[in-house]
Image (cartoon, rainbow, N blue to C red; front, side, top):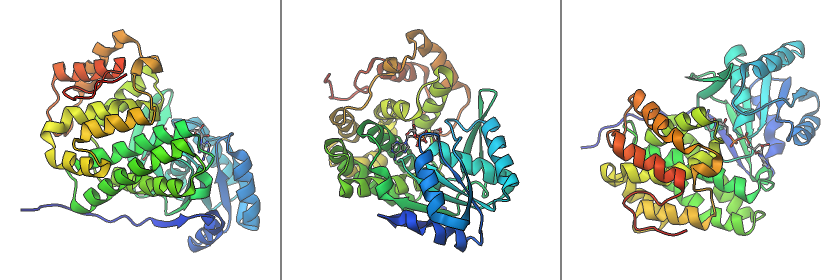
Length: 359
Ligand code: NAD
């Protein structure tokens, strides 16, 4: 007997090539006339170009977005928004810039147009993580979810192969955990499987040729689906571990996801057979964990937490922190297997109980 709850998302999504020229239409459709364009310093030229193309619809550019959405930066941006009388934000960039747009929206209730340039998927969620004095706090709410999202595949052509791989694996992690989430549903399972399939097919092609537009289109499509998964159902062991380890040892977000994902899947595999069957099918493999580990190796993705400078003597503290706050996970959290998981990920060893044993 199936039992589920499904809630559809109200985000209006435009997807294609050259779609950045449709940002003006999105601003007008929101009833806004004065956009503040947001970016990181690195993306400032593209943000200024976008603002210039918007003409009178853009009142200013705030190029100060940084990782982890510090409240101090948000306060500066809100100040600019108020001074310029802006009535919406356009966030052009990855999860950091989109996070800033959300942080502004939750304080001012201005509508958002998100124009993502990575595969992180933040644009499809109502989740905001912010840092104040180094401590991270996460909140959810309707004002956080961007009203309009414009996916322009052309903007991803500049994403280097290595960043594309880690960003793509980060996105796939949302789909993996959506498949075995306690509150998953048939619609999300379809999206999750298709998201993983799209990435598994496209990432190897992007590594071979980062300018392959069809592969870029497939990967961005996967990013949309995986972002929807993250925004729709609850995450489990993998995300909690990434959050815990990232916070404790200041590890980079996407790389940490890429390293831990095969290990978290292996931990949960025996307790989530249907999710593993779907993952294996999406990966075109007999076994989901082996299929994903093979993909990670083929993509030359990072595989060891020690390469991210996590100290070996941090493993015990990480296990203790991971066990501290309980949450729903297909397989109960147990100290010894959890320690083995983290130790293997630290070392770059294959996931537990898999046949994969290669350099
Ligand atoms: P990011 O936005 O910091 O971008 C990573 C790097 O890639 C930056 O140096 C950026 O300048 C560069 N970059 C971005 N697009 C590029 C492009 N097209 N070409 C070349 N370089 C480009 O990081 P991210 O990986 O996109 O996102 C990670 C952040 O987003 C984390 O802080 C994470 O917590 C957050 N996140 C939040 C959610 C959510 O739902 N709230 C979801 C996923 C990620």
